[in-house]
Each structure stands twice: as C-alpha cells, then as structure tokens.
Amino acid sequence: MTTQESWKTDPLNWGHGPAVFEAFLEPTCPFCARTFPKLFQLLQLAGEERLTVKVRLHSQPWHMYSGVICRAILAAATLPGGKEAAKKVMEAVFAHRDAFEFTHHASGPNMDCTPNDILKRIAHYSSVDVSAPFALPGLDREVKWHTRYARQNGIHVSPTFMVNGIVRAELGSGDELSKWQDALGLA
Image 1 (tube, rainbow, N blue to C red):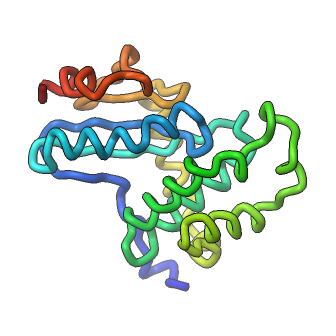
Image 2 (image 1 turned 90 degrees about the vertical axis):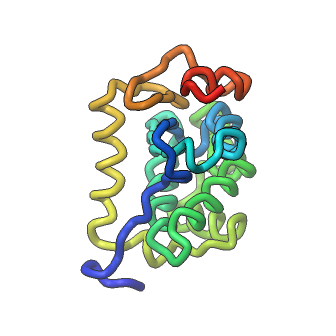
C-alpha cells in the first residue's frame, strides 16, 4: 500500500485536445453504462490531439452502493496504470451491473452485501484489486472533489454532459456520436 504522502489519483482524462467533453457518470446507472464506451469511440473518431474526454463520477443515493463503487474507481486510479486501472473497474461494473445494484433500488440478492463483498466483486470482474488503496487516508478528498464539481455545475442526474465547460442538457446517452461531435464543433 502506498503512503499518504506518496499516492496520487490519476485524473480520469483521455486525450489532450483543446475541445473538452466531460461526462458525469454514476457507475451502476444503465444510461451511464450505455454512455461509457461511446466516450472512447468519440475520442477515437475525433482524435486525441483534438479532444479531451473527462469522466466525472456522480454518486447518486438511490444507487445504494454508488459511494463505495465511486471510491473504488478512484482507488484504482491511485494504482500503477492509474486511469487505465480505473477504466477497467468502470468497464467491469458497467458490464456486471446486477452484481452491484439492488433490484428496484431497494431489494434483491445484493441486500446482504457488504462493502468488502463489493470490493471482492470488483477485483473478480476487473482483475484490479482496490482493497488496499480503498483504505487510503485522504482518498475521500478525491470523492468530495467529484461531488463538489458536479454540484458547482448544477449537475443533478447522470449522465450529464458538459462541452467546453458548459452543461449541455440536450445531450444524452442515446445520441448518435455525430450529435456529440456537432456539439463539440468536431464534425
């Protein structure tokens, strides 16, 4: 485990272009699950020199393990490989939502799960063990940063998108990539 003084969280940013597409995602939301792979398709279409994609975690209390999973994703971002380890965790959670979500947000087989069970499932599905960095003192600062950033920008639901710092409520997970490209001026 890394010490408090030596760890850092790799930002969940891909690409390095001047156009910025930010996606506020909740890791067990079905609409965010549809959005996540499209972000990387968009980046591939636009090119890393023209576009930066930023994932912002947006925990929502009706997704009962949301806080635990968001912290686990940020814990993964402290590991070697940083954002790519976090990406593997997000992909695993999105691909296996039933292992991390309650039925109708309030019942089902996950009612008896503990946070440790969630971390073990993340390791099983993603091959990324986040148990040690999950306990890092100060990791809550990263979780709080994502929460504050969403609140400061008036984000209430997921997925929500910002283009070059402006919330674009008309954009959604079901959009064709061409609509996102148009919003970015990259068509």
